[in-house]
Image 1 (tube, helix red, strand yellow):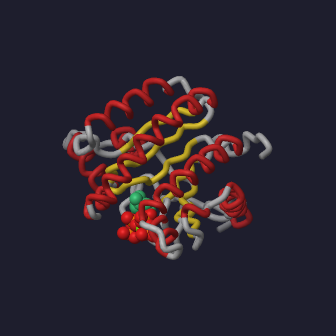
Image 2 (tube, rainbow, N blue to C red; image 1 turned 60 degrees about the vertical axis):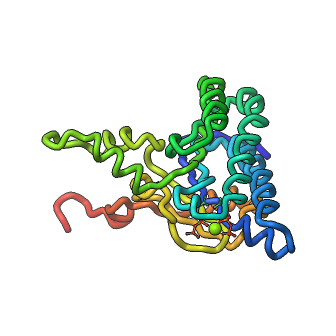
Length: 238
Ligand code: IPE
Ligand code: IPE
Ligand code: MG
């Protein structure tokens, strides 16, 4: 794929959904779907880096996903740790700064140690800011940040974004798997995000699908509550 820097200021977030259904229609256990999902993560991170995207945030495990059977949860956590260990050298090589957002206190100590190691080793990365959301809940993140604010001092949206620590505004939010909902992902940060929903299951999501979502994003007019460029009235007339 051709190198480009045109998406350097674009922050993309993806709700990677559909692993379980991908496996079920193939007569495979759900964990096989998650393994295929991890392969897709590698592919899409590489594509994002090649496309020159500035920031990519991936929803890997929601705080509500603890409700799933322990075999599935355990398998996902193991997969996640393996992913971090395997990908660290590549991230360092390609200037990818990897960070994990979400709660840490409920994660296994070995996983926490791996996360801290990867974050430390990739801190110098300047090409792609990759954030992986694990045990993440947007509402909980907002409540935590709100409880840190000083009640008698007004706070700006930017300051609040910093307190949230999730990377700030999302420009393009993609959800695979056919559902059209946010499932408690980056609610504050996606206030003006362009939404792209695709029926493609996450393990089948390709670099071309990512490029096509970006193409759709580029073709949309973002108004942020203002007017279309053509509608701006010359001074003196409304
Ligand atoms: C997304 O795929 C991955 C996680 C939520 C961990 P799912 O596991 O939700 O797959 P479906 O929605 O059941 O197909
Ligand atoms: C959202 O998918 C969470 C992740 C992709 C990690 P879910 O499959 O958990 O969401 P719902 O249950 O369909 O809303
Ligand atoms: Mg799902």
